[in-house]
Image (cartoon, rainbow over all chains, first blue to last red; front, side):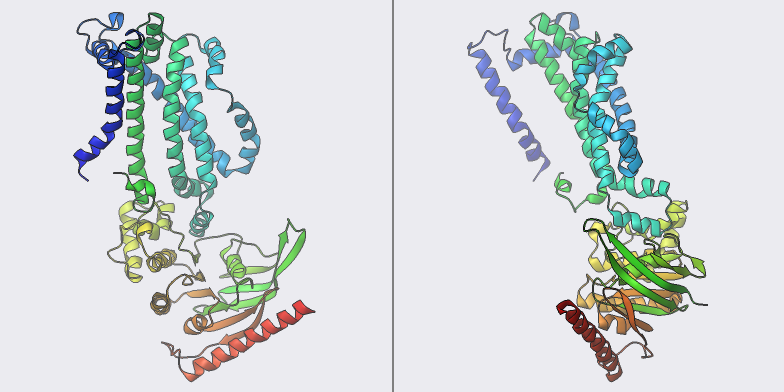
Length: 268
Length: 260
């Protein structure tokens, strides 16, 4: 199949939804302010980004700054979650005593919704970036942790035997066998984690900070600017999609050895 | 001096679920000389792999001692190369990195590892496949990588746990021939576990016929047949008949015990 017809395939569903939505909005079935047509949203979004006619009022031309402050929070919280989740996951998966001592506590914290930490996060960290970063961390940490543990525990024992036959120390086993063996699972966790990270940065921005895409979304809701709400939603969706695509690129580079042996490797 | 010494080895497996002990190996003593090619022959479950794993250091005897080159075995180590039934290659490393894995652990530079691996890749006939990944190799090729990896350790002893069991008949014959050639060239001691009488007779300088439950060595047979071995010759068949009779007797006794 050619590249062109492939990208056409990807566009069919979104284009169909947009077209139906445009027609529905223009039919006057609902007041235009409650469900702005895609063309209106696009116009407002354009002004938010480029600032040509101030349809987005105070937000005009400020999209990049908003997107950057959200992305910075995601990057910080996600970065901490990746390092701590992978390290702790390997420790829990490998050493039984770590599992026995640490895991019960973590499993009790896991079902607590990250959002319910907001009051405490604000008391601890104040109204600034820190509570938002903390929430992003909470959201991304557990999927990364759980998948890393799973990856370590399902590592092939025979590979560990083969490596110790070649004289590997425990530290070398972890670095040269267990970590690469767990990598496919770790990447699954990283992809779930990045989605959670975006969800939580928006939640945090609604309450704890005064900048970012989530803040604009909530602020516009107060002023009944549903076109801006939708533009903010679309922005978050696109950024989430882009970061996930970035992780997928990293993944296929790191897991190129799976080429031809898994279903995943069929993807172009 | 003997290369490998097994003295009065007994192994009892604790079956925690059924709360009983299983005597897997009962007072086995065996010494393997330097440059010998010893085949441990027995049916599945006779404890031959357990014995091999004890020499490798993956398992500890309940009683008795294992020494290799005069040193007591207390864990796996690079002085004993092992070739497994499944090749057990690191799927994320290309062929040459798998062969040179030991050097990676020793912190060698990439270029040096690559050079060192080449000799062994050539030795097992895999030139041209250096950059293939394990998922791209056939079963026989994977086993060749496993053998090259064990040879690169330059070990005193090579332990092989039914390495050709999963291969087709033709590939198996080729691999057996090559293994004998490598062994003759490298002058190392080989302990080879198999359940195939023919394989043991084609490869070994000695065959230890094992009986099962508990595992014991029934008879040690020295083979002075010329190589390459003629699998249809009368002396080969005399040995084969003798070993098959041993196995058959053993089977009869087991069944009588079971009935009584």
